[in-house]
Image 1 (cartoon, rainbow, N blue to C red):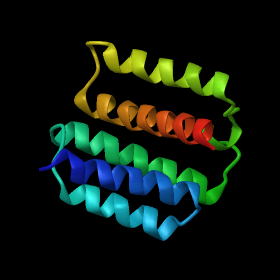
Image 2 (cartoon, helix red, strand yellow; image 1 turned 90 degrees about the horizontal axis):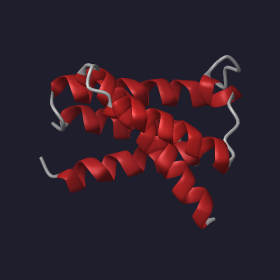
Image 3 (tube, rainbow, N blue to C red; image 1 turned 30 degrees about the vertical axis):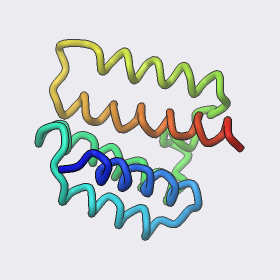
Image 4 (cartoon, rainbow, N blue to C red; image 1 turned 45 degrees about the vertical axis):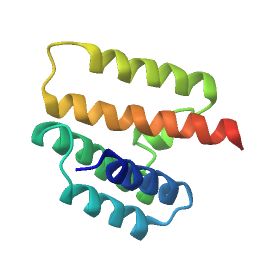
Length: 117
């Protein structure tokens, strides 16, 4: 599977979340499910994180990390470093690595798009 096709779906997911187009974001997740990347466990973790991110933003539940954590650039860099540090650890399952890689990608996207605005 082409990484460009996977990357397109990931960016589409993030763009649609940013614009609050939840149906389109959900379609991007469905498209990702049909593709193969990073191994089955990794992919399951990655997609599970996307499902959670979508649900959290859609519902606005104040108990969720996304809806209560400060997302200024300084804190986003701290979150990004935390997620990447977790990924680099050797004792984690591929599911966990995929899950935290999705979060890392999401935070990186937010940093990149907020810095370019």
